[in-house]
Length: 189
Image (cartoon, rainbow, N blue to C red; front, side, top):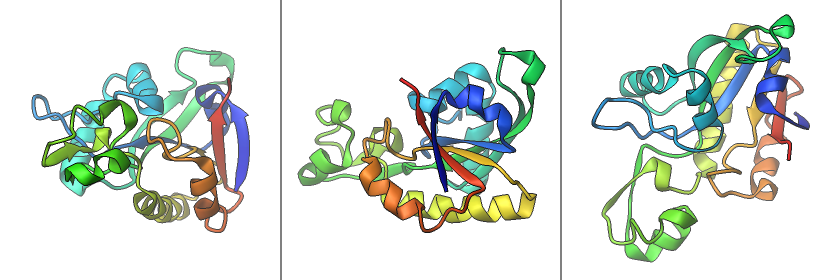
């Protein structure tokens, strides 16, 4: 596994596949995936059909790693270097979670703790990212990369932004599993 610090959408032009970290929540009103923060929100801003595509795929296949679409990278930037890239979902949060008040402080992202403190079911977007789900997503991503013969895959630090996990906890899970086809990117400040 390689690691870089850069803008994900500019760097993505050099990769066969670019992953976006997601949750499994779907809006009841329109069936679209909830993509309200982090790189998922950025992807939904660049490609407005992505929430609908992901929502349909989650309903069909579940909250798993999935090919969303082939996109031109980077969107609206530097067309001289643009090329088609596979955009892939990478679940780090569940669709929803059963909640008890005693777990609210550890399972909910900080800004949602009070809002969902006494709810029985909580949407995945309000949960802290789950290490077990990240591990499962890595295994699925490797299988997809092998099947598709991808040589370069870009993955943001899973669960370390809006998922509120620390890279010191996530990195040790990924390093022994991911080979040098995979580059983990952290946001350029």
